[in-house]
Image 1 (tube, rainbow, N blue to C red):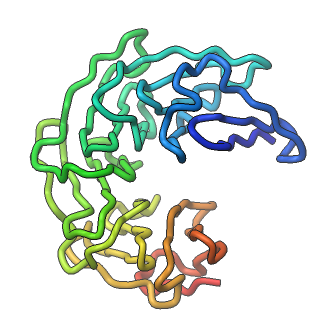
Image 2 (image 1 turned 120 degrees about the vertical axis):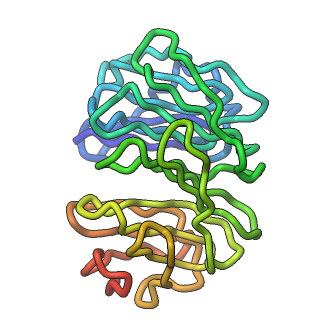
Image 3 (image 1 turned 30 degrees about the horizontal axis):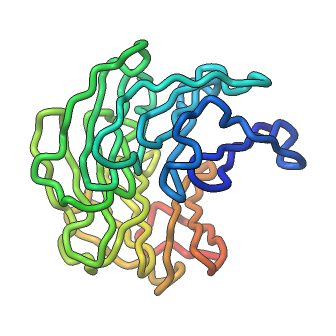
Length: 252
């Protein structure tokens, strides 16, 4: 029955009755009102009581279900706002954040009162980081996507100190808004872009367009609902894949 949503600029709301009613819970987030228009926030996949929210700083609540959640800044501001947040499934200490200018940081002690943050953006584009995705089966495998109608908007690394690899070969020069990994196959990737959905069956070495899905549409969000892949577009509705493990999945 707990739903979380955002008005704008990190003004987060919570529903405790399945969406019938909602109230704001952003009192205590010092950046609320000054964050990105659509600011990132994520529930810890390992603890439904913990929520992370990104403005100039990274904010954490460990009691987000309380009537009045408390918030603490756990990452100091960088030169631009936070635009992407990811927490590793199975280990809440592993957190990655991306920024408007393409800077990326990670921590391996994210549950500490004052986590240690390490920069990890060498070789990456210096443009808006739209999404960071951690493989749910291998927390060493991390993906970063970027905006801009330019080539090179999908990257991956296989370890904290490993170099980033550009896996955007033959993708159109368009913003990539979302990337998800199949929960049952780490080599199966799906991305939502400004021109539709693309899929890879080989970890990003090659990509195919999702011809049965929303084509020529801004696909701003991809997520799993059980075994099925759901795509949310900007103004074109939502689509659900009937067979998401195929790069030729049928959407409806």
